[in-house]
Image 1 (cartoon, protein in one colour):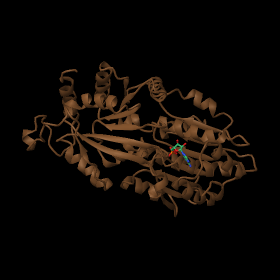
Image 2: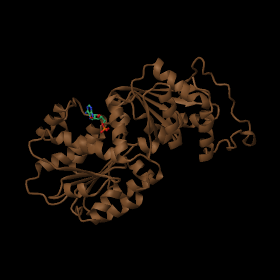
Image 3: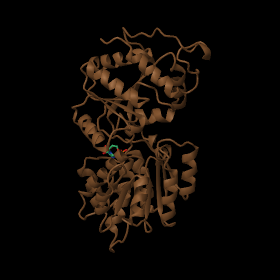
Image 4: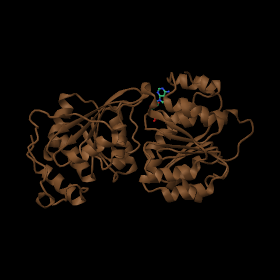
Length: 416
Ligand code: AMP
């Protein structure tokens, strides 16, 4: 199968070849013809499946074919994070650069001054990639009109709702024309996402991206048993022994992010924390250092790590397990992109074993437990809620206090 056979304009088929895509991914092969027909699409797709091109190419196809001078926005892409806004916007611009005629792609997200974004919208735009809050701000400033938007894309709909954007999305929907095409992508489909999809979509074409084994991310899942206080030491050893060039480490709290990064640095590992308290400038700088390889280990919270797109991220580590199986899927999906293979390592202790089983059950996949010499666990799970030394109730989510205690226990460990 080739891009040309999907019904795309020759200029677009050439453009994808120019940027190095040889064959369409599963989501592209299914979504592109449907979107070209004007159908709504409901795509179950992870980051790394090629979904950006799956929704961008049909939009560009329509814009290339449009004879008349367009007024107003053609395509609106809503994304949950600034990183994803940049990543998606830049990916579309890369395609546009190969086209014989200009298409204007704008990117907007909050946390930075709105003025440059308003200036950039002067004279209108064809495709807008934005986070919902900032888009509303721009609409309030009359920087943009969306009442003639032809295509709405919700990218990572589950994350959009997770991050509390449902009200903003409802407001935006109210400003869009009723007659439009909707392309809806989500990695997971909890009830809230299903409800939004059924409200938004009309007889959508349903697409499961994981159907195509050739493009399925190749992720080796590993689980290493280790006592919680020894995780940083183990991490340091693994980075060295397994010669991991670039590792994204997930932790549960900002505190842990700072703490683990600090401890790694003191052990000679080029590590940095990455969490929600960072200014936009600091985020950009840290990400650039990580991308360029100046930083070897990034210790991030889930929220901060959302939307980070780093080509060739070979390893992710669940230092703290994610709360939900859906978050696990998202985390490990950060590696093994676009045909590359990746490794996802989870640290599992006696206390978190039960939770990891839940994750395994949900993904219907067992991950063999490993032990590393010198790091064999000695701690036992608390026998009853009352005897839990941390005071947490077993089987319940860790409280903030529990996590701080855990981090403090870790800090008290002797340095090597
Ligand atoms: P996405 O899921 O859209 O974030 O895309 C993930 C990665 O796959 C990006 O780095 C894309 O450049 C790449 N990609 C998308 N489509 C293809 C394709 N058909 N062939 C090879 N790589 C692709």
